[in-house]
Amino acid sequence: MADNQSPELFGQTPWQTVGPFFHYALPWWGGADLTGQSDIGAAPTRLVGHNPALNHSHGRPMPAGEPIDIFGRVLDGAGEFVSDALIEIWQADADGQYGGAFPGFGRAPTDEAGVFHFRTIRPGSVPGPGKTLQAPHIAIGVLGRGLLKRLVTRLYFADAPQNDSDPILDLVPAERRPSLIAQRDGEAWRFDIVLSGPNETVFFDC
Amino acid sequence: MSADTPFSPEDPAAQPASLFPDYRSTVLRSPSQPLIRIPQTLTETSGLSDGWDRLMGGAFADLTTQHEGVALGQRIVVTGRVLDENHRPVPRTVIEIWQANSAGRYAHVRDQWDAPLDPNFSGAGRVVTDDDGAYRYLTVRPGAYPWGNHHNAWRPAHIHLSLLGPAFATRLVTQMYFPDDPLIEIDPIANAVPLPYRQRMVSRFDIGTTVPNWALGYNFDIILRGREATPTED
Ligand SMILES: [Fe+3]
Image 1 (cartoon, protein in one colour):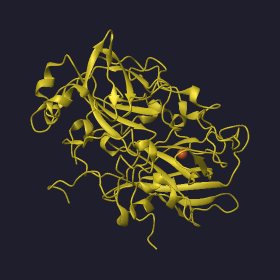
Image 2 (image 1 turned 180 degrees about the horizontal axis):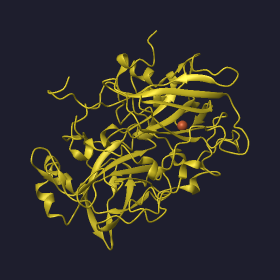
Image 3 (image 1 turned 135 degrees about the vertical axis):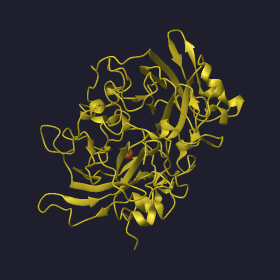
């Protein structure tokens, strides 16, 4: 019989869904605030009793750059709110750098109304393929019950002039690009994620 | 190998499709349009390789003694290595762990099955790989549990695992199953992965890892996407 654990035989470990009970281990206090100033990100009301995964991590110095709030809803193919999704973000700091003091990584579970909320810093431009420059963007991973593997998308900012020359947006048919563009909504940015159906978000293979 | 060296693509033979109708929740939650293929940029090839503990907090590798009393159930040690596709160790990466208790119940408000909660078991842990990519944690063997996917549906015993890896592109969430569990072959979530790749998610009982008079031992290696070799390399 084949050895289940032989890397030579099987290559990449397969993806599996996070299921509905990830609130247990994945979100943490402050995980949705990349500026390190608040507690948002944990979902303690989903849990029974104390859970050690919800470590506090806020209380870092405020990073340089423009603080922004991003709100969005996750919707399924029937237009229903998805209340058990988890959104992960990965982004550069205000100077377009990865790997500095700014963490760049955050997580936010959707609430009972399917809403997620991040507080972060507006990212700078980062290099693209060849000698290109990418427009400011945030990479997004969508996880959840019913998602066997992560869906990957990107958030761009509606008022960024660099969007017109972004090498990744350029690969997306013009009529589908709006799903990747966050819009100003009062003081915050609005970015909904539609998993399936007529207004489906563009998802990437990368 | 620089930070912008791309990773080999997702292996379509090994990875499940998003849509697998036997797992009913995938039907309304899978994109209907094909994914748009993009080149990996610095955004995809960089990641939170260090400093995760600054954000999430430290490791806690013993799930059995997080409370006043000791968790109920069969104590198990799980060890393994995190490697990339080139069989190189992936050091200092975080593995997040969550699971049901030994009766198959999660301490989660949405888990309404009437199996007993264990006041001494939360079911969450976190470990970090060493320089050799190795990890080890102590827990109890989770129970199987019923779910609403179809009539008489039961999830095989499993432990959920989440890995960040070195880059945005290497993210992996998987489930570890146990050898000789008859529920695996009738479970739509496991079966979304075709054979033989499904077998990679089944751990191996190991008498060498088993601690005498203490805990049974299981091995589970995890293979992440690896950086593509560049022409100037070996
Ligand atoms: Fe589960």
